[in-house]
Amino acid sequence: MTSQTDFDLSVTMTDDAPPQAGSSDGHAIETTDLDIYYGEFKAVEGVSLRVEPRSITAVIGPSGCGKSTFLRTLNRMHEVIPGARVEGRVKLNGRDLYAADVDPVAVRRRVGMVFQRPNPFPTMSIYQNVLAGHRLNSRRLARSEADEIVEKSLRGAHLWEEVKDRLDRPGSSLSGGQQQRLCIARAIAVEPDVLLMDEPCSALDPISTLAIEQLMFDLKETYTIVIVTHNMQQAARVSDRTAFFNVEGPGRPGRLVEVDETDRIFVNPSKQATQDYITGRFG
Amino acid sequence: MTADANVHFHDEMAALERRILGMAEQAEKMVGMAVNSVIHDDPGLADLVIGMDDEIDRVYLTAHHDWTSLMARGQPLGADLRRMTVLLQLNAIFERMGDQCVNIAKIAKANAGLPRVDRVCAVIREMGDLVREMMRSALGAYVREDVDEARLLPTLDEPVDRLNASMYKEAVAVRADPSILEWATRVLMVSRALERLGDQAVDLGEMTAYLVTGERVEFDESGIMLRDA
Image (cartoon, rainbow over all chains, first blue to last red; front, side, top):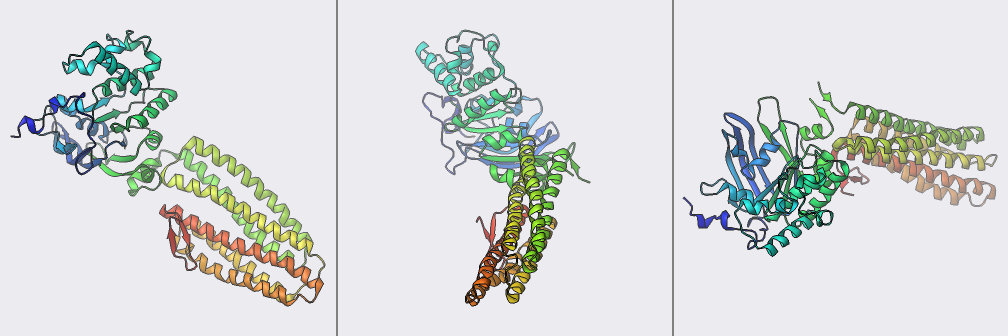
C-alpha cells in the first residue's frame, strides 16, 4: 500500500499549494478505460479522455448517455450512491484518484463542483457560504484571513460588487444567477485544481447565463473546467474542447463517441453519430 | 428511417436552397441569351436579359434576409452550419453571375448596328457554350454532392481561359478598321465577363467540396484540392 506521504491530498491545503499546472505529461485529468456502474448496471463504458489544464472541456450528449455520471466520477461523488462503483482509472495531475489510500474528501477539495440548481446553504449568510468549504475542512481562520478569502472569492466569481454591502444577508436572498455565482465563489474559495460544472446555467435566465459564461472565461486562467451542458450553443461558446457521449438505447451503457477541438466538433465532426446529434437527426 | 428532431429548420433550409439554386438556373439561361444578343446583334434580347436580372436581384435580397433569420433562429451546427455558410456564398456568386450577364447584354446594346467579325462571334459563341456547360456541371455536382465531378471544373475552365486570352489577338488583328475596332474592343469585355463566369462556376465547385468534406479548398488547374486555402 502506498504511504499517505506519497499522495497526501489531505494536507495540500489551499494557502500553501497553488493550483498545479497538470501532470508531467500535460494533462490535468486523464481517464483510462473507465466503466461506471450503478450496482450491476453499467451506465458508462470504456471512457478514455484527457483534459488539458486551464482549459474548458464541455461534455454534451442526449439524456441518459452518462455525461453527469461521468462528471461525478471525476471527484468521487459517484460513489456516495449505494452500490455505485467505477472500474478503470481516473488521474488528477498524474495521480490515481481511486487509489486505496486516497481520501475522497480530499479529492473533492481539489476538484470542486457546481450543480444544476444553485444550492447555497440557506441558513448561512453570504459570507459564511463562501467559507463553508473551509469550515467543512475544519480550518480555523483568522478574521482578516477569512475576510480576504471572502472578498477574493466573491471577486473571482464576479459577485463582490453586488454583495459587498450585505455580506451578512442569507445566501438565499440573492437572485438565481447570483446564487449560482455564490456557489462558484464557495467552490473556488478552497482553491481547487478543477471545477466541475453540471449544467450550471440550466436554471438561469439568459443574462445570468451570460454572466456565468463570462466568469468561466476568467476562471480558466486559473482552473481546469469540465462542464456538462445540454445547451450545444453554450458548449460552442465557452469550451476549448468538446466531448460527445452517446447511448445506443435503453439499458445500454453510454460511451464517449468523440472528443476534439470545439470548433471541429461543431463544424466538421469526425463521427456520424456526432453529426446526427448536433444537427438534430437520429436514426 | 432517420428521425429528424429539427425538421422545421431543415425544411426551411431546403426551401432556401431551392430558391438560391433557382438563381443559378436563371443565370445559366441568361448567359445563353446574353451571348446571342451579342453575336446576333439583338438589343431586344439584351433588354430581356437585363429584366431577368431584376428577378435574380429580388431573390438575392429576400434570400439574404431569410438566411439571416434562419441563422438566428436555427443556430445550425455541423453539416447544417456548413450548408448555410455555403448557401450565403452561393447567393452572392449567383447574383454576380446575373450581373455579368447584364454586363454582356449592355455591351450588346452599345454595339447595336456596328459591323461585326464572324470569326470573333464564333469564339464568343464557343465560350458561351463552354461556360453554360460548366454552370450546369457545377450545379449538378453541388446537387449530387459529387466532389469528383466538381474537381473536373478547372479542366472545363481551361479552354475558356485560353479563348479569352486569344481574344486580345483578335482585337489587335482588326485595329486597322475603326468601326470594327470599337465593336471588338467592347467584345473583349464580353470575353472577360464569360471568363469570370467560368471562374465563378469553379468557385461553386470549391463550395461543393467544402460542403462535403468540411475542408476549405482551392482547385488548381488540374482539379487538385489545395487545402485550407
